[in-house]
Image 1 (cartoon, one colour):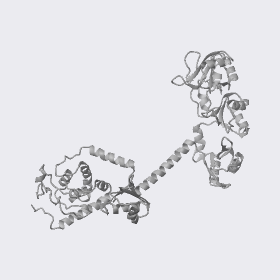
Image 2 (cartoon, one colour):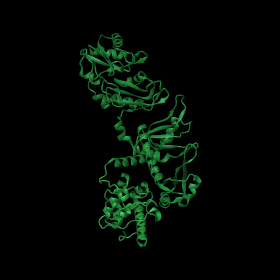
Image 3 (cartoon, one colour):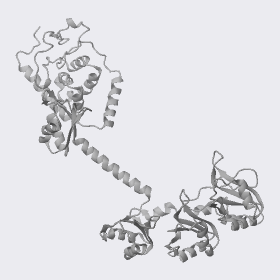
Image 4 (cartoon, helix red, strand yellow):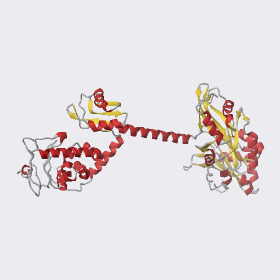
Length: 571
């Protein structure tokens, strides 16, 4: 960090101190700059309205000032709360620091110290002392006076919050290690304004984590659910049997009342671990103590978030697999009726029919089982079952995000041109399907009909009087036509379907072909007559697809044994 000089160029902002370290010090500057050369003072904790003219007027009372500068933000109008004052001689700068340090300017005491171009001493933490459990009334000057007798102080600061209130800890950096060591030996554990303070060498955050911050290597213990009458001494006495204690404190509010939690810091990690193992869960005055490793707020929040996410995800996965979505419900089915339909499969956790704003059924609902096995059994047996006058649709319930992703993927597939050119054939009557095993030419609908043809297979002529084939087989499967070449039949069936069914057919055919290679085209066409969501489920469930293929083959065998079925010799 460059110091300001007597030239007109503005000084730059000092390098940021290490966590807990004070502002720029002057130890190296004292040795590096001989008397009589230009010297620069760092002036911190400036009130926002203090400018260069006011700094010059203040410091000129002690010695001639070469220049002054208040550092501002990038916009150039808001003070950053610190600045520099340059003197012609180092002796003048030293006198100004001794006289004006902690002087109140615009209602706020300033901190004055030598500025140093080399931040090595500051960042090293050499001879830097950390003090905690300070009384709120102790300010920068009080702390400075408390430690002044141990040696030359380079910087001294009490940490404050946004409102300028003390946070209860501070830092004092000495010129030499011996002064810091003497201060620690003399003041650690002493009373300051009625509070027992802790004084020790400053450690960076990384050093603290390496020494005592890990889950299995810590010295600081957090205790909550303390009795309200517990004092610091009571807390120390409670934990004293487990080893040497460096500090023990019960946290209190502004009025001095106990907040029922506190901290105990041991000298050795093994003592802290022993205290946690022995005292966690212990009852004192009808309250059960919690004793554990003290954690930083950020670490505690990250741990709680990870725990919450893990629990939520695990619960969501379990609930999702046991939660069934139902649709195509009759309007007269209510929650109680729905529960009776599904309670034979296992214990039901919740059961709900979705209602509109007027209290009428929307034809859908949910049934949540306590076990995944019960949900699977209900899904297998109830999907497609006639309830009232409608076939019931049952599927695993999906979260909104998952449904959106599936629909987006389906839309993307639909917008992609199909690999196979469509072949125009007449539309198939609802709930009926027919197999054309050859690729029919573009023949007008009124001329298309099924004929036995060794090259083209059968062609379909709609029965205007009866709406297609008159005979329907169980499970919604129609009477199939005699088998020709499978791939030709597969393409012809797809040619009569819409683009979404074509996509489903292209995905379904290879799966069916593996199970029933000789009749794959027929079976694929039969399955494509089902509801699209049912077809999608069969594609994703090998076991369900195998059952449906077996069912289709049974229909084919029944048709083959029926003498009334059309044969290849019929005209």
